[in-house]
Image 1 (cartoon, helix red, strand yellow):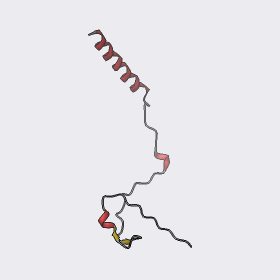
Image 2 (tube, one colour):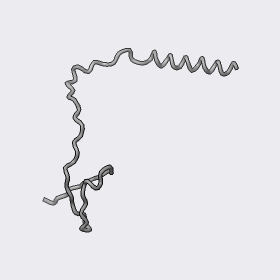
Image 3 (cartoon, one colour):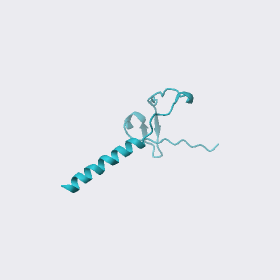
Image 4 (cartoon, helix red, strand yellow):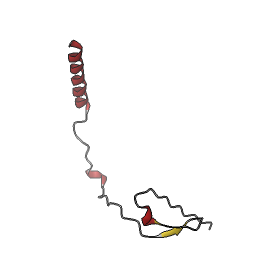
Length: 74
């Protein structure tokens, strides 16, 4: 019983210590000139062939991670 109450007191002391160590006020963000975030727009509908000749539609891959790499030699 003594060990449990001692652990409870120690736990309460740690929580109070963390609460006192936290910053008292959040920093002012007024001088940062922040702009509102615009949510992403859906990608346009398009299709591309792969090296094997199969045509891939972007709409068919909805919900999956897609990496499109365009490469040119100019």
